[in-house]
Length: 79
Image 1 (cartoon, one colour):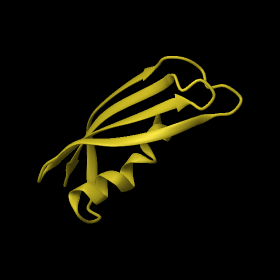
Image 2: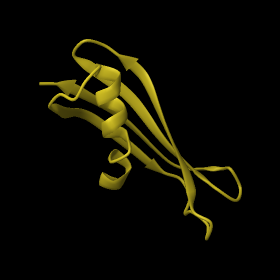
Image 3: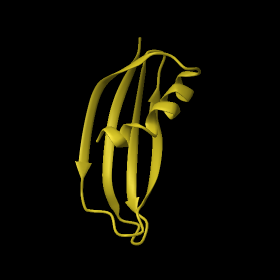
Image 4: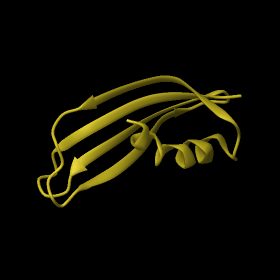
């Protein structure tokens, strides 16, 4: 699940407005199915961007079928 956080960090920093030290407050991951040979497409959504907390969701969909393969919901706090 660490690899799922990588595409999210720059997006979260952008939601805050600039690079700032952040820490993980909460992470919940769900792995629903394996990806096919074609791999997957990653989508990062910011659900809420406050002054101190940013809540987001990373979704990975199988490229061939379009079905959700994994999802990570996380909350980060600006230090």
